[in-house]
Length: 85
Image (tube, rainbow, N blue to C red; front, side, top):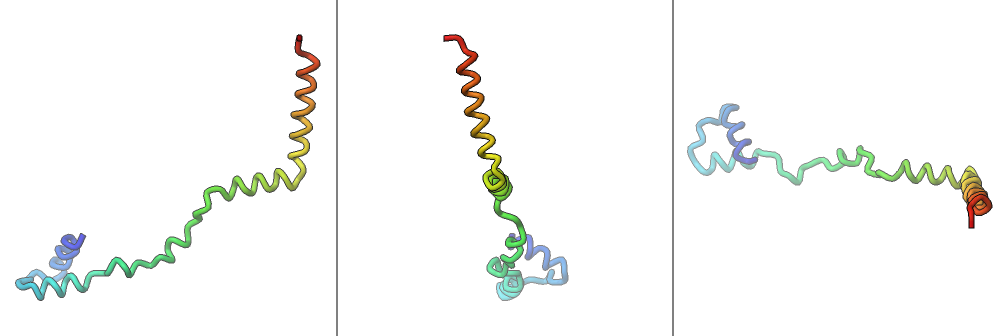
């Protein structure tokens, strides 16, 4: 990556790099990896299970869970009464 940036800087007018001090000047002018703005990552939603939690919360708070349990019980009883043996 540094090599590409050095080549990029040479096309911007620093084509006469002839010593190590010139290379040091070019490399020191490059952005440091520690200068990355980490707040950019905070803008993304990183909670993949939020929709599942909201759906389950609504399922339990609205009382639909009791209708589901009642349906299981009634279905089991109907199956028991209609099966042979």
